Image 1: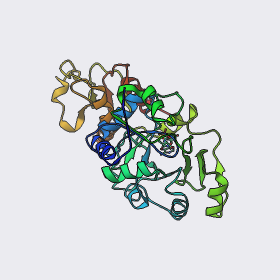
Image 2: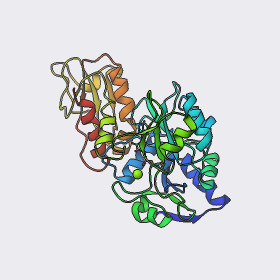
Image 3: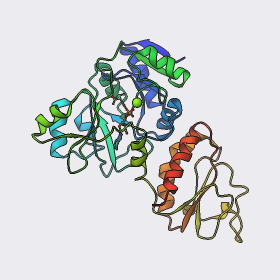
Length: 329
Ligand code: TXA
Ligand code: MG
């Protein structure tokens, strides 16, 4: 079971080290306990999805220590500056366009052009963020579909050994996840209701703020969101050989992959082939997925042939994303 430690200077320093070296930490926030990983490290973010058993790669909230840190990753407009000044640190997440130089892992942002950011209103979370010096991706620290954890014991029960360390800081003050406010479109829209209401936000903005129909955690909505991410190049799934003009997105050994009438896949030019994980490791594959799809999308290939990824564990999520990416409309 994940080790539960009480909060002091030494345990926060230990947690910061774990995060910097790619591990997972149960982090107290004012809303719910988060399952935190270094958001710049795709392999660390992949561990979050594995630990939660998420059916698909939902985009995660990126936690930062202050507005200046957030500005490295998202572009603030006037409305965003106003609400951030009013409510941060606090239970408000802002959806904003990513900056051009944004280095957040594509897996954490689900390959979307926008990113969810927040400055948590909890002393321990802020000390941890300052201590590790990296942005932290952190969904609620529970198995997918289970109740959100508002105590360290919930985290340990739900996630067991999948979390390296749990910082115990009692029960969460808010107890429901942050309000998610989308400021990337023409009108401000609350995608997920939380402790900060549309009325309060509206008072700061001096403009009406609507709640979206249904919330983003509803089963339909993440799917709609994720449908936005698809390469321009068509994908062909479960490929067992390559046709002429196709690029290869491999998984595991390429030894038995041939190009019809033209030899072995291993002989393809470098820009036409990527391997999600030579050793067949699903964590590595998940971490590579978005970046490699993007690279092959830019290869000039007619189509991307994708080798079979085993439909177990994290493979189920990888296949979900591949299936969405292959969808034509
Ligand atoms: O209170 C909270 O926000 C907690 C604590 C740990 O901070 N975290 C949390 O994270 O609830 P998570 O990953 O479970 O929720 C992320 C929510 C989801 O509803 C997701 O669909 C939405 O934010 N989201 C993330 N990025 C988005 C984007 N680019 N556009 C629209 N919605 C986004
Ligand atoms: Mg959640």
